[in-house]
Amino acid sequence: MKGFCLRAKSESEDCIKTYIMKVQKQFGKKVKFVRHDGAREFATNSLKDFYEDEGIEQQTTVPYAHQTNGTAERAIRTIVTIGRSMLHHAKLDKRFWAEAAMTAIYVKNRLPSPKIEHKTPFEIVYKCKPSVKHMRVFGCRTYILTPKEKRLKWDPKARTGLFLGYEEVSKAYRLYDIEAGQVVISRDVNFDESTFGLSPTISDEDVDDLDFESLDIDNDGPRQTECTQAGKRKSRPSDEDEAARRPRAVRHRPGLEEASAPNYSSPHRADADEEEKHGDEDDDSTPPVFWRASANAVEAGDLSEPTTFQEAVNGPDQVHWRKAILA
Image (cartoon, rainbow, N blue to C red):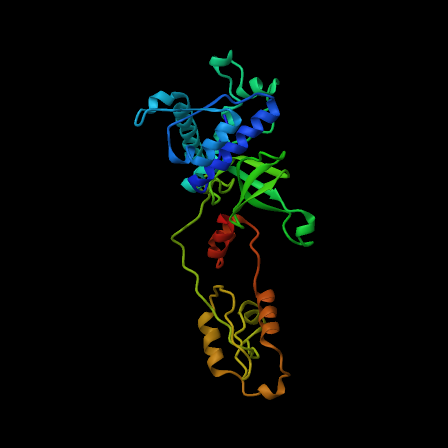
């Protein structure tokens, strides 16, 4: 069985001529007759002249009696059925119908048939059994190797694609490059025959190995409060212990850009806000320090890491720890 994908019916004439000449040259056999349904693209004046020159007889079926050309009609139905099933299984739309049809023909020619003593059409024509080691599932996810001549040192070595069939004139695969949106030919491919579709699908079950239901997390705990840092200032603690536990509020200096600081909760939020309102009057005696360095130093000195699971989920930073566990 041989198939052609045409952009227009007018291309039928050249395909018929080329295929007949190819068969006669390769197999040393003469084509004796051609049967068709009388469509105009199969009965042009140019084709009639070609048939006469080659000594080929034309046989046409009766109009609206497709059953008289049953072999061709049945073959078309078989290819459409196989191709439609492959498209549905691969979760692809109808724009890939041509690739599905050509792949269906490729597979059909390698299936045994009871009409030819359970041999394959390929075996009847080429006198040898076909190899199926290279065959893959239509529409599966592929990773196409990008040649080193076409990529830079830090570029990805492969790009994502879909398997669409087999190249006729070379030992290679026909692949759909998802990023480029076009069909490419390549032999350096990795196949993922369990994944289909144009967009990657993520299963809800493919999340994490942790059993979240067994974790003792109190979802009704106090919500985290947000504290913003606006600049730098000198701290005036009442005593050394209070200064060690209290987060330092930093006042914004003129000319410096404000930015949002990390979120963390503190039991001394009110005290810090009160001191920030009053501020210090001796800013001139303090050497200028950029606010980013001050903020980083405050965060590094004040944050303490929990040592147990219960401390993590019940402490002041419980929201962050929960997000980290569920990530």
